[in-house]
Image 1 (cartoon, rainbow, N blue to C red):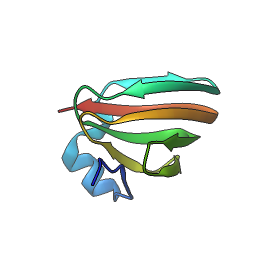
Image 2: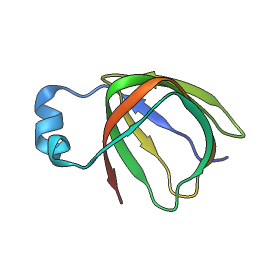
Image 3: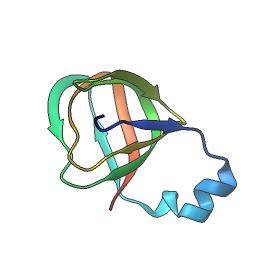
Image 4: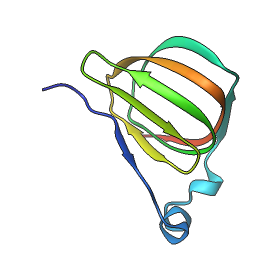
Length: 90
């Protein structure tokens, strides 16, 4: 069994408890690119619409989604609407 991307929703209180608003911010215009995660990444999408494809699955997420990418994951990002997210490694 491979590495799975986890997509959930968090309450404002949960986001505050995790300190998400203090995490760095990353943004990207509409694009399509390969990516490999050298460490686990946790992120909270502020804006955007993204489809990520791995060897095992294709997932779609956007604004308001809390996403965890496992360490070692190889995938392709297809950014359909410009993305802005808070992110944290480890």
